[in-house]
Amino acid sequence: MSVEAVRAYLLGLQERIVGAVQAEDGKPFITDGWTRAPEERLQGDGLSRLVEEGNLLERGGCNFSHVRGPALPPSATQHRPELAGAPFEAMGVSLVMHPRNPYVPTVHMNVRMLAALPEGSAAVTWFGGGMDLTPYYGFEEDARHFHATCRDALAPFGDGLYPRFKAWCDDYFFLKHRNEPRGIGGIFYDDFAEGGFEHGFAMTRSVGDAFLQAWLPIVQRRRALPYGEAEREFQAYRRGRYVEFNLVWDRGTLFGLQSGGRTESILMSMPPRAAWRYDWHPDAGTPEARLYTDFLRPRDWAAEAPAGPTA
Image (tube, rainbow, N blue to C red; front, side, top):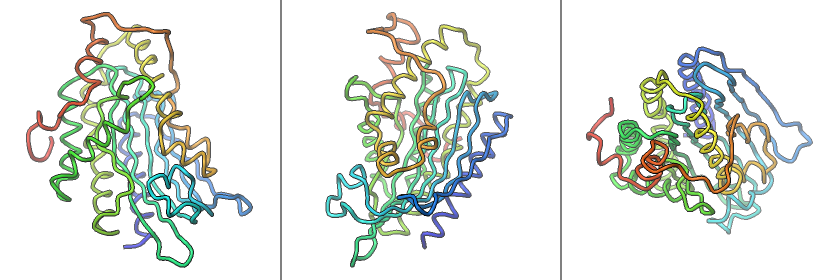
């Protein structure tokens, strides 16, 4: 395997995902290719695919980037201090879909490879990625399906990976300043080099390939549910938490900004409409309150789902 094979896979994955989501939405995604100028500190190229004010998506984007830089930023070396200052090469596909209907959950997925190139030493390569679901109104069927799909994607690579990456996701997508999960989690992994390049790449392909099966059936079940302004207001309130996480805690956002990445692409993940209220809490017994009591807490969703391939 090679870096060229990773790039080819990621571009193909982006095309497949955009094609499927575009067909579901009905509005074409715009395509914005970019290349860094020779005099810029960060070199490389990318392809941003975005839709706004669609039929399904209020805003959604799926980005590919491939960059090279003179020194790894601090966010990438907090667990590998010996690589601080090393040149690097990074590529990945990252997406966030913000549906208009509050009953359809926001979803995030990212798969990436990062290689440090220390002078006089062999390249140190690792993979990262995962996907997570952020519902505004919880449905147990949807949560079980999403987690079972994540479980099945990892199953060929080791029985212990899903519970390990599920716990990692629960810990990572957590707003420490709120003492509150962002959503119902999924899987998350970083700095993954176990089993060598080919093993890490195969596992990451399996995760990327599972995305459409994890999310689109949920979209198809929920997109026609009727909603009103109250549901939209709660969606905007919960989207505020999404913004807080991405700007305060997310390593990917920090890596992009610290390394001199393309700001417009990095901040594509922001929802088009968000709101904040002072010390607001939902009334007991409401669907909004049930999101907190039943869904925004660690729960073994996959154990409640049937074993084997998901439908």
